[in-house]
Length: 331
Image (cartoon, rainbow, N blue to C red; front, side, top):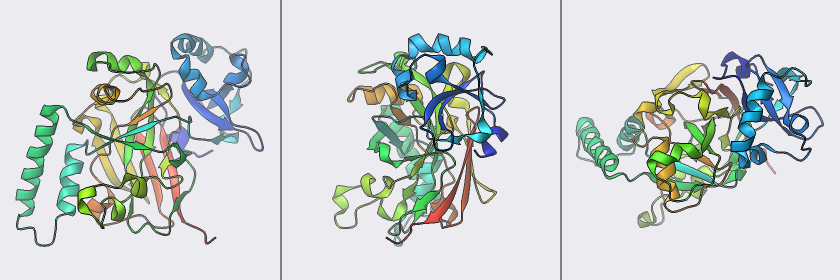
């Protein structure tokens, strides 16, 4: 357990997570604001239950979770004695890129070619116009991530030896409940069970293919190393989050604030992203929709991640995560 879990409490009467006692198998748990955890395998009478299994029957199970949050007849475990894992194992991860207006402008300026004739002000104005046009045309940019990138919210982050420019990207993640296929924007949030925190690490040096620029971005290479997506600490039900478009996303590096932005800066909110993805793909219970990262990444600051760095990330009402970067051990 990490003290960050309780120093940034979550919204509402309960949250969901995946926990384990020393030398015991992980289990789905209901965590109370005070820090006690109820083993939902026992409370719901299913010894094989997982957090994803809860999401697969979300409409039926949510009322029972509300009741259990106030039920003191079951034994609970103190959070301090448990390991906090990534809150669930999704089948699919959908990731939104270039979704925060200020972030995209900052990255475009940072990646300008040395011979770019534009001034900084001209470059910022041009990319701002592109962002406004994208929002008006309703064209989010979404790609696929691998579940094997997920790690717990307090696990160490192993920086691959090949990663020349590892960077942080703290993001709001929506967790899907009902299957969603070709749903409207108006219907989309009915398919969201809750929200959690994701730090979508990226190696900036391998984002773009060097051998053939026409290929474009290489998301496999730059984002999908094992453990490159610390997730959690838990899932906060959507009913406890008044407005996912009005949350504060904050990341500190070694105690210094790097990202501090509202989700109001998103070009495409959660409902528009879920609807857009569902026009092509079938979203399944437990799937994650990462909504993009706000301004303040390492490329903006000219400071990338290195061994020993400590990242602390929080989002309003969702708690906090704390991870330490370590070097990849020689094999």
